[in-house]
Length: 158
Image 1 (cartoon, rainbow, N blue to C red):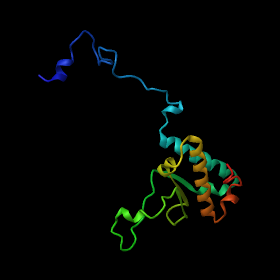
Image 2: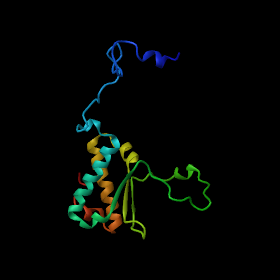
Image 3: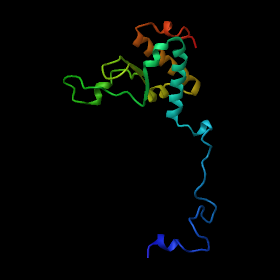
Image 4: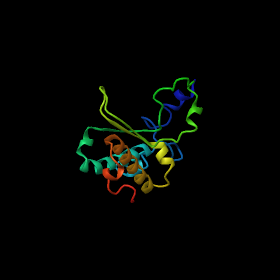
C-alpha cells in the first residue's frame, strides 16, 4: 500500500488538506498583485523602458512606429568569418547596453535594451531609471541620426 492512498481518507475531514498539523503548508500570496512587491525584476525594468519611451514620444511622435524590446542579454546575430563560435571572441569587446536596428522589409525599426548589463551597472532603482533613459535616448539618437542632446535636452544632466 503506497503512502498517498493511506493518507487519503484518514481523519474525519473530507476534501484536500490545506495545512499540516503544525499550521504550515499552502498559504496565500505574500502580497496582493497590485502591490509593486509582486512585480518581477523583468517587469519593473520593462516599465522603466516604457516610461522613458513615453517621455520621448511626446517630443518625437515618429517613435510610435518603433518597437522597443527588452532582452536579458545581448546576443550575437551571426558568427564572423573564420569564427568557430567560441565565446572568447567577446572578451575584448565592451558589453552593449542597447542596440538600434533600422527598419527592414519584414520588420519595423527596433530598439533593444539589454536588462542584465544595465542592472549590473546600477545599485538602485533611481540609478537604473537614469541609465535606462540614457540608453533609450542614445539608441533613439542613433536610429534618427541625431545627437543624444537633441533627442532629449536633459540628456547627461541628471
